Amino acid sequence: MNAKMILADLDHTLLRSDGSISEYTKQILKECQSRGILIVIATARYWIGAERYIEEIQPDYEITTDGTLIHQCGKQIYSCSMDMIDANQIIQDLIEQNPNTEITVASGRQVFWNSDHISESEKLHKAVYNDYEKPLCCPINKIVAELFDNNIAIEIANKNHCRLQGYRGENWYAFLPEESGKIQAIIELAKLLNISLGDIVSFGDDINDMEMLKICGIGVAVSNAVMDVKAAADCVTLSNDEDGVAYWIEKNILTNCNKK
Image 1: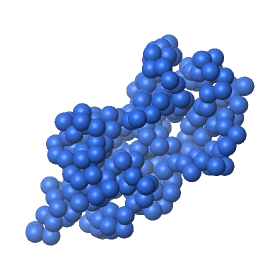
Image 2: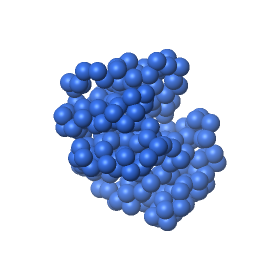
Image 3: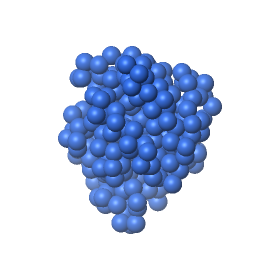
């Protein structure tokens, strides 16, 4: 395949289970870039939660915060934000459900968090403390809170006209703009770069990657992906702990380039 862009989720896909990126994977991604193939990460993580991997990989573009933001070398080039009134109402609804629940809110690269343990967080130690006593007055891309009742999460999302996103094996729920998602960000980036979706190879493991795998030219699931994702993918590669993304790229893209 004559790929022009490689899109990869981070957790459980490009990253190993211990959160590391192998030297082999980094080498393969750099080889792609040297051949003019764009490298793009597409992650549910906030930008500050993905920052260490952005520094390691140095992708050409970063789709973060569940597809509500796109950055190029740290410079924001796309943002999809919620209605501010609805967003602040979601925060209040979550607090009413449980005054002690921890809530994170993304506004661009900045993240607010009502936790007393911000400095201890590996992912979000750069977050800013906020108790949400006053309404936020900034673009809000994503709100995340822990809920132990799926029906409550659905009720809050429906009431406030937003999209609800759950995560694999977790009780954390994200409230997002209705029109947001990884595929919307991918479509916007493809338009900006004048690249056909058919020239993109995407890699993922979770339900929020499924549409991404379907719309791109080739969608590849790692073998540790959930069953629905593997069923939706065009093919399945090795697991994240076996560097499945890099292995597939080397065998199906770089090797084919070498033969030409």
